[in-house]
Image (cartoon, rainbow, N blue to C red):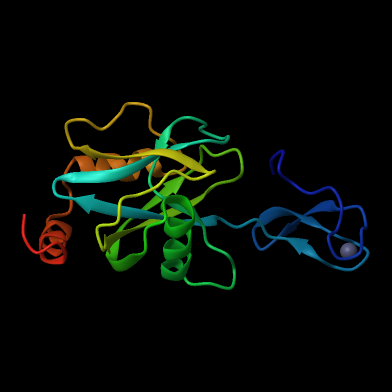
Length: 182
Ligand SMILES: [Zn+2]
């Protein structure tokens, strides 16, 4: 129960009432029987490396406006996480990526749009330079030593810190193969 809870049934417009259903108090429409089941959002974020650096973008919009995050977005309900990631990276940076392997899964409860899970994937690109977009400006490659302090929430701070901590030796090996050395 939170301030994101609905007041009215999305099916018939009836006024919702709270009821205990499946071991939790949930919102129920007495008129038509619809039950509101809140579920986590699914986001995807791209880990795009160049040498020893990772690509971050500065957000142009709230929440976390002007903070740094991975190229990322929500997964639409009719697309796979990999397809969503390719779409979002292209929209935000103009880069066409290939999704190589999953890098992490980060639960977050600090985004006012709702709690969720950010899935991150190691991606390779053809080396095209990223371009700024309406959603994200200042595309910049940062080394582990130069990662900015102002990291966005929504799982991004966790994912970027995990990369910075070098928790994924497997990904390092994949990255070297993808870029032909380094
Ligand atoms: Zn209803």
